[in-house]
Length: 102
Length: 167
Image 1: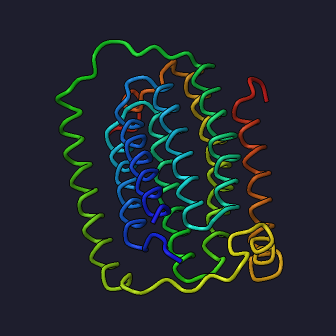
Image 2 (image 1 turned 90 degrees about the horizontal axis):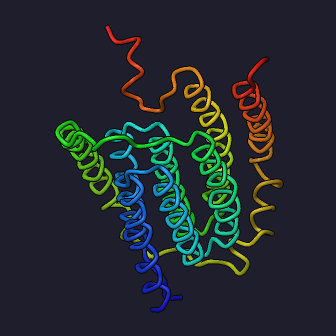
């Protein structure tokens, strides 16, 4: 069967993960930082599925589904934290949270 | 052949949408770009014979998680005020690119020796719900599966407790 090899998938996965890292490091809006984290989780899922296909094993798919479940829990708790933050400080800018700066 | 072409097409879409996520000013535009990225990734999963994972990707990620994001964005109704200070952004972008470049070099260096191998033969039914269910419930993943269900419960209770006004 003619299909894509492993390397192109891993390159795509690496690029997406990189975009997520750049987003987390450069953006100030807490919501966009969360979205960048989701982007990184998806990049990892893509790598899991690619390796799973390379080895004709189902384990990578199971891990991808576990990652999705953890991402769902993380998004729920994280967004609740953002709402709490907005209620107490009326901001979602991460730079405004400098109370612990020395 | 078509599979490869479609894979590259959808990967390009995913990367463009991913870049759009981190460059958009408004959070709602970022969220919609992220939805496009998730759909493109679901198509990529289909090209990689992961049919069930593709369906779950659309249902859970593009459906549930992104609806939650967009709901919170609309609930908070944040206004972006003033232009973004470009000096700080470009310095931070430089740091981000440096870290990202290091990551990329490390990954390619490690993987280059591993990946020059033909993919293993797939048995019929690979990636189907039956295969996933067999691996999930019939093997070593039964305990992790239960742990994940506990985690989801804890996450749900935590979200409710955090977002409630009076506990």
